Every structure is written in C-alpha cells, then in structure tokens.
Image 1 (cartoon, helix red, strand yellow):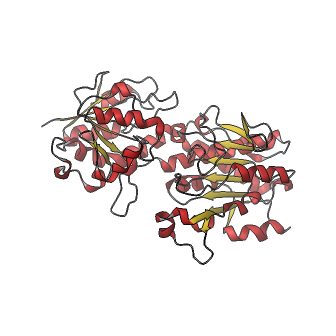
Image 2 (image 1 turned 180 degrees about the vertical axis):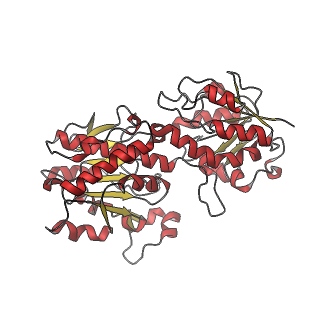
Image 3 (image 1 turned 90 degrees about the vertical axis):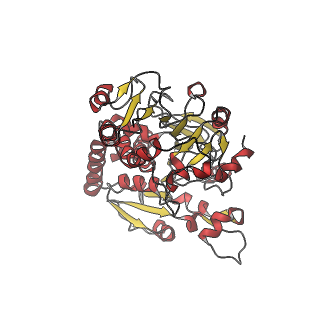
Length: 436
C-alpha cells in the first residue's frame, strides 16, 4: 500500500527557507516505507526542487491528494482542507491571538493538528525542535549587534569583525569568524572601558545550549550569579577573556513569602507565589541573552520601570545589548515591544522616552528580537530538524485518523502533540477554549 504526504512551501516571509524534511530523508522514506512525497514549488526553499526530484519526490502546486501535510511555520487559512492532518508549529498553545483564527478554521473543517512543539517523551522533554538553532543564530546576531553598538559609542572592539548570521554561507564559517575574534581577545585584550565584560544567559534548555555553543568560541571564564557582585568590585579582572553567567530559575525568582524556600516544582505549579529577583544582576551585565520559556503566569525578568530607573540614575549604564532569543512580545523582557527581521534585527529602546528606534544608534539599550532566528541558518537547521522528525513520519503517515481519538494508534510521543482531532480540542488542550 502506498501512503502519501505533502510538504507545503513556506511563505511567512522571504527569510523562511527551512524545510521539515530534506531530500536525503525524503529518499529514505520513499524507498524504505513506500511513502509518496509531494512538495509545492518554492523559489526560496534552501534545498532545490531538482534535489527533491532526484530523491524521488514530486513537485506540484496542488497537495489535495495528500491526507497529511507537513510544514514548518503557520499556514494561511485558505490552504486548509476538510478532514486533513496538518503537522507544523502552530504557535497556539499559549492562546496566541494572531493564530486563533487559524485554529478556528481547522476546527470548523474537522481537521487534525499535530504540533511539533508538544512532541515529548515520557518525562515531558521535547523531541522535535529548532531551539538550538535559534540560540546559534541569535548569539551570532547578538555579537554582531555588540560590535555595532560599541563602534557607535566610539569604543574600538574586536566584535566589529562579526557579521549577521544570515550573511555567512555556513554555520562553520560563522564559527570560524567568531573563533578568530576570540583569538584577538586572547592576544590583544578588550578595551579597559568594557571590562569586566559579562554576558548573562538565562535558561539551560535547547536555546541556551545553542547560545553557549557560540559564546564559548570566545575565551571565557564561567562564574556563578553570586560571583558577579564581588567580581565588579575587583580591579584585577582579566581583559583577555569574557565572563559568562548562566542563570537558572532559582537565580531569577524568589518566593514572595520570606518564610518559604525556592522550590522548582512549586514555582512551575504556582508561579504567582514568586517574584523576580533578576534586576539586581542587570546593572552589571553588558550583554543579556534571554533563552527562557515564558508566559504571563510568570514574573518578568526585565521591566520597563526598572530600565527607566537604571538609565535615569546611571550616566552610562553597563547594559548595551539584550539578545531576546525567546522573543515574547512584552513578555519576560518587557521592552521587547516588537519582532524584527534578519536584515533589520535590532532597535534601541529608550527607557526614559519609552520609545524604540530601529538600528543600534541612540540613547537606551539595543534589543535583538528576530522572531524566526533559525531561518538565518536554514540549511543546518533543516538538516538537524529532519533527522529527528524522519523516524516519526512513517508512524504518522500510516495512522488511521478516521477512528475516535481514544482508538488512534499514534505513538504516545506524537499523540501528546495532537491539539485538534476531528475538529475538536483533545483533552489535554481543552483549556484553549478560553482563548477561542
């Protein structure tokens, strides 16, 4: 028996060149699992149509004969067809307003929605993700922004050699460029005005892993959050390396009640019992890279009110750059007031005026807020994503979606990720009715 799957072209913007499945893995699915693969044509896809044709896939505009459609990003309303299964990042589980009309449309048409973001193992760990690649691209762009900002301030610095992530042909080329900057720091040192140069990284998941993979190409000393305060009071800190600090939950928040101790599980279950303690670190960081998951239940890390106080009281605050890789608008970083694009990735937020100006010039702090960073390293991101998605594709393609949800034989890791089935929210996602 032949099974059919479709791959939709990505058209969210001109930067979105990623694919869920690369030609090599498409060939394996065709030859080993009797799966026919159809792709919509695309002028920007990171892999060419010829590569897919050579792998045995078919290129055609109409995917209506495919009962299951794979994509990367959100899908426009007019693409959906009744009773089909769609597998993509829907960005709906937080009740994101801009995607509720898409979710409603799928429900009206009796569709099934499988969201990569919720494909997890028995311990709740995500199995299919681009998080590491967001961290990789985001840290490259953050270092680029630092070089531009310091140059505008009139401070000579080695970071001027770093380009935007999308301007490198490969990730390896980007890494080599940053390694060379690291060698220059080792030999020539950093300007005294910048030292100690402290990079703060929030979180320790996949995004943080990618962030640190790039940051660690520079000579660094890792210190704990508690070590920041004595470090900035010293006069013998090194000019020949940077300082890296990774913040975990216990460093970022504290119980409101002084009689309670921090408990990670309690924090996730009852975030209303906690408040941010992160602002005590901010004045000592030159660069903050935000990599945490956040929703409105949790305290913010950086508020507009605090930044206004910091810039009002300090003539020259140390904080130059916030690389908000998580990019939740007015979320954990409240001054992330908008998303940006790879060719215009930063703006300066002026806390006194409460205004933002595109670019890296002006009074305030530079905010990097590109909302789809992995597309800047599309080839590497697609290869790695396809590698982890491929084993699940035959299981999805061969599933009988006509049966009731309780009888559906999807493996547990995939069944966890079924948000809509036969047009109805599944039990784990019925809370989303409140957003509809």
